[in-house]
Length: 305
Ligand code: GLN
Image 1 (tube, protein in one colour):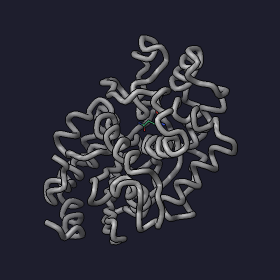
Image 2 (cartoon, rainbow, N blue to C red):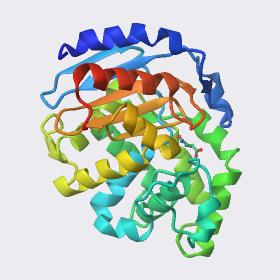
Image 3 (tube, protein in one colour):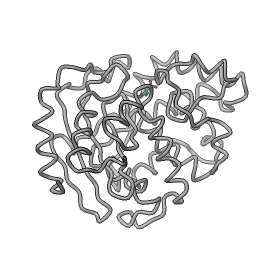
């Protein structure tokens, strides 16, 4: 079925029974205040056409989806050097687990688990200039929306509850895999996670990954084709943490989730799709969002397998 607007409207109704089965994240206190019933979904095509339903224009906390954009920035500045700081293997553990970090000498499994995102950000912070501005400007450019900004309340809320992430950063620093001051690194990490974007923003921001790094909608080359291919591969194998296998089985496309309830899915060569619903499954991925994406790729035959 190629009438994407009709598909989105069908899905928005079909997911109704799935509400109430997940749980809104509360380990970052400010996130617990978001209404559980929110649902939005947006599709962005390379032609510039877009489709959306529900709360698709409402900004929400992108959380770990920011790890994807920081990886893009790091890849575009440092190329394959990124892979000296983080691996590209699924961890099989929770996104905030540090159990393998000591055994593997402070080198995180991939850039999408928390320690991997901290190491990637640490690399990016080695560049001259203000990293927060760099990240915000990049997101504004990708979303083609200058209103994209940080939610200071969420940022400060996470910063006050970041002992685990701080512990990971210190452990990596002891192995020489973090160079920055840990406080500055944590503050910048909480900043990137607390950026707010809507499904429409995210779908636009994901488009260059679906189109080989160049986007005619943005009229620019954001990544090389090889980099886009590699980031999609790492998303497919690591983007959904320890449920990445069942996500590939159900949805069948590269995707990155965040505990704010967003998921950005890239359908290579075709489109980018973003969904938002704050209730999470036990792995920290949007419960309803995953179900919605499963319906989308099944109905439109756009899974990559
Ligand atoms: N800021 C969150 C954290 O560090 C991001 C986690 C996520 O979205 N999976 O725990």
